[in-house]
Length: 176
Ligand SMILES: CC(C)(COP(=O)(O)OP(=O)(O)OC[C@H]1O[C@@H](n2cnc3c(N)ncnc32)[C@H](O)[C@@H]1OP(=O)(O)O)[C@@H](O)C(=O)NCCC(=O)NCCS
Image 1 (cartoon, protein in one colour):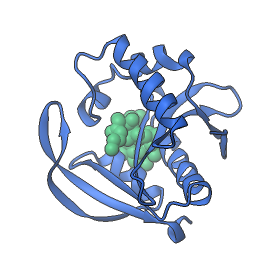
Image 2 (tube, rainbow, N blue to C red):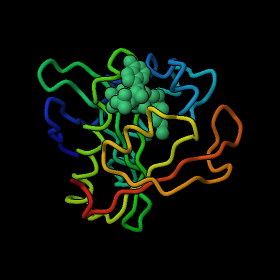
Image 3 (tube, rainbow, N blue to C red):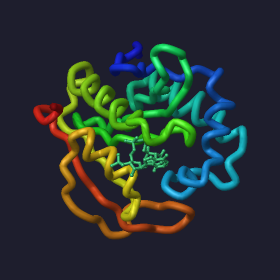
Image 4 (tube, rainbow, N blue to C red):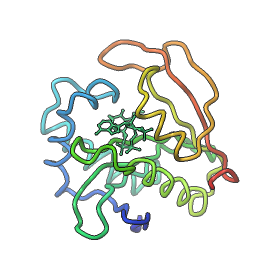
């Protein structure tokens, strides 16, 4: 996967040098609340995420995981991803490092990865799901152009329990 330009940001593929950063960010309370992560989150989990989920599955075309960086300074700010489903649809995922939140990093990153996937991977629809109550994630989806479709019962597993989910989607022609 190549780099994807995104305004003042750039999306780049993960490398093994990102393991420690992933470990650090994954200790954050909001991530542990709203992202399905092992608990406790150990360095071996970060290594598995980077080496297998990001790099290996990326090479196989099953996932697309990108680090979102400041294009000027190279500072790592967050992560955006697509889990490919093999039927021209994918599910989007993202997090922003705590110190970088509130600056529009995730919406810009999500728009860029969606534009890339529609153009380069032939996707027709990208789905977004978040736990009901994750207002920050919902704002990201809305700002990136997703249409909220409703609520699903017990469709996500967070903190070891099933929780209700908001669901939305973005169609190829809707990326404004
Ligand atoms: C959801 C998340 C990715 C948003 O990323 P971001 O880069 O801060 O996105 P934005 O700057 O557009 O902010 C989105 C919303 O976060 C909230 N927010 C703003 N500043 C914030 C801050 N300093 N800290 C936390 N949340 C903040 C606001 O509700 C904002 O919406 P608004 O623009 O309408 O005010 C980030 O909060 C995060 O990583 N959360 C934990 C992981 C997660 O929930 N991922 C999504 C799983 S579906």
